[in-house]
Length: 140
Image 1 (tube, rainbow, N blue to C red):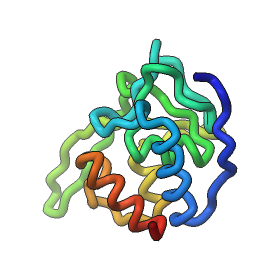
Image 2 (image 1 turned 90 degrees about the vertical axis):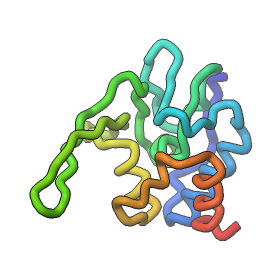
Image 3 (image 1 turned 30 degrees about the horizontal axis):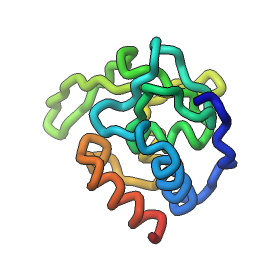
């Protein structure tokens, strides 16, 4: 499928969550919480273009995709250093998106867009949990 998703930049967290729920409903085969974003052939997916057959996006990737970010395949990860209280730190790997020369993790784009506090771990949970939380945010 190569058509365009007609959603405009949704705006409020509730509007974004509603747009994500609508996109997941319209493209159920393209929703999976198993990976951040899987794209056939690893080709980046421009904003608001309907997902190609065989691609999947997690809930956070749908947020980024519908708010103007180009998605990059899960095989092309960015390393992030996580700093914990007491000086402990560790490395995590995230898929990322880019827009206007800026590159951010898909998780960060979704967190900021939906007004979520860091550390909630919603994006690494189950599909049911992600959909439940999006419905809460959307007021559905």
